[in-house]
Length: 171
Image (cartoon, rainbow, N blue to C red; front, top):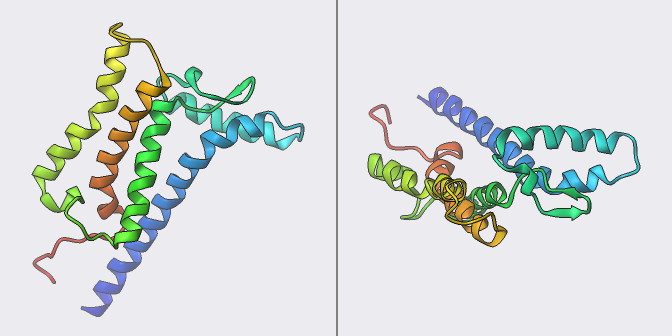
């Protein structure tokens, strides 16, 4: 029984570490890309190119990124960066609360999935409204929609990625 628990805890540790590494890259990368691109050092603009390549493939409007080192812009738009910020906030909250709290949606099963899904629809609904011409792109509009999506996503997934565990029949 102890060996099973050790193996399970080791697995959770690696999943958590990988998730944190990826989240850190999503937080730092878009901000670092314009600074690296503006650098005179040979390797740094190449690293920026990699970050921009990734941003172009995950963000629907990377050309709308904020200019942090003009003429170089962030690797993603503020809708996407709002989503990353929401994920980052929930990661910090999970760490601070040790995963305890009524707001962690995974503990509610399918009801938690439903609520997380509703929150995560903020981003695509705002994007659809923009594409349909209901309003134009504005960083002050898109950022909160991304933030709501990131919070919904984080409130559901952080317990799963970082060690929350429902009591099982084997415990």
